[in-house]
Image (cartoon, rainbow, N blue to C red):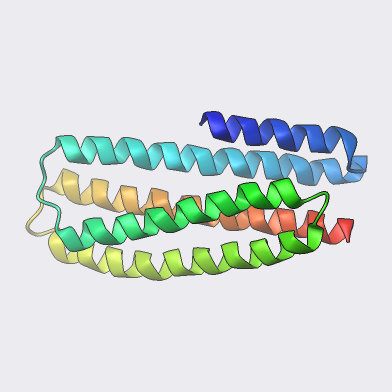
Length: 163
């Protein structure tokens, strides 16, 4: 969360110096979207802690797929940060980064379908609470990926204004 706060400060500084007041609404969307990424990430980390304390026998295939989703979201968040840092001086690079973030989000969506099918298939053998928590965890990871894509779209629109 501290790193997300640092990014918000950087964005706020940009909005007060570089951009026309009309574009400040877009900057606000960028700040709120970045905050949403952090919130979903925090939510999924808390769900993992709860799930691990339940000693539920979650199939390894589900765990591995959710780890794969999480790693992709981590990659996307690092790219969001890089795009924010490049926004003023290299807006064309921001467009490339935004495209990559969009592809990552699509990959996460594809993995989510696999994970969801595995969760549903495992629910008969899991406690109801563990089954529900697995789905909530999967959704939080996917929501973070969606927010990364939303932020990338906002960055794309700002980059196009700067070109």
